[in-house]
Length: 145
Image 1 (cartoon, rainbow, N blue to C red):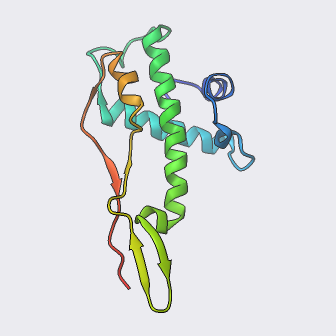
Image 2 (cartoon, one colour; image 1 turned 120 degrees about the horizontal axis):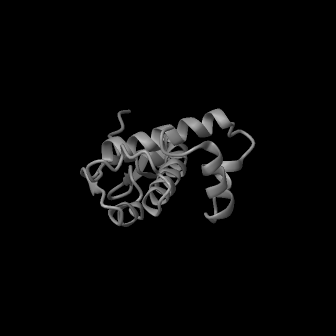
C-alpha cells in the first residue's frame, strides 16, 4: 500500500468510523485487511478517479488532502468487504428477492445495482480535486435453469 499503512487504517476504523465492526472480526487477519486496502487503493487512486497533476507523486503526504484520500481508501476497503458478502450469496447478487420450488417461482427486484464506489466517496474525493473516471456498478445477471 502506497498511501496508508495498516496501522493508519486500523486507527481510522477504531476512532473515526462508526459501525466498522466488520473490520475487526476474528476471521479478518492483517493479511486479509491489507489485501482489501491494496485493492481499494488501486480502485480509487489508479482507476476510478483522476487526481490533479503531481498529487499522487508528492513526497510529502501529511496534509489534509492526503488524510481525505486515506479515509476514502478505508471507506472503499470496507465497502469491498460488504460487497464481497453479497457475492457469497448469489441470490442477493442477482437481485433475487424470493425463490421457491414447486411450482418453480423466482421474483427479481425491478433493478439491482451495487455501486463499485460508494456514493459518499465522490464529494470527499472531489473536495481534493479528484475527478471521477466514470461510474462502475455491479449489476444483476440472468439466471439459467
